[in-house]
Length: 305
Image (cartoon, rainbow, N blue to C red; front, side):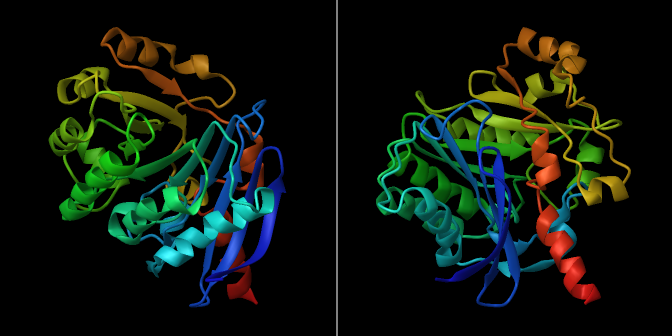
């Protein structure tokens, strides 16, 4: 095994965070989660790390506090194997929607091993419901990655079996640069790629916004750049990470009241956009199944010791 799981924490019917050590001795984390009131036969979500930390250093993400390099294909697949073997040792996964998300720690577009994993996953498991999900901030200079990702999607994941997501968070270009402090694709570039990526029968491409106070989301700007027939908008609260607190970032979506953003949702829908308001299970915040939280805590304890 290319990773050694040393700890897990959570609740079986909500979310479990797994902490593992790779051969390099560094720590990673990955997650198994469930949608409330849905059995594993209906939906099962795995959230994988693709790096030791992350070099991007988004202002709200704990994973970016340090970076120790990319994970290998074997180290990424081992995360899937560990979770699957606990529940389905025969590798037959009878789940209608088996989502494998490359969104835990690390920017997937910086690691070509993610593409290798995507090519192997269909052969590794008997999982008719497999739906990979790649969430990216669209870093500049990774055109080859995105070109190959398009080829893989068209070869292995046709007819709505792939979820592509761009994490944008605000329509204010200067504030987007502040939140995500690297060179990245413009809205025009994301839109142009989406035009090539989306074909009839695909899932719409997700534009993700973790709503924050003082970081506006203007429906007219979204409409100016993105085709509502090919893109949808997903709105989430800001996760209660340490980095968000340190940087004085405050969620603009009340996790206990999704109606707090009714006007934004209505305005987007009036422009033709499908809108998903995804709040999730509040207990996941206590479990620590948000980006990088658990490894951050363990690393601090080890540093003190």
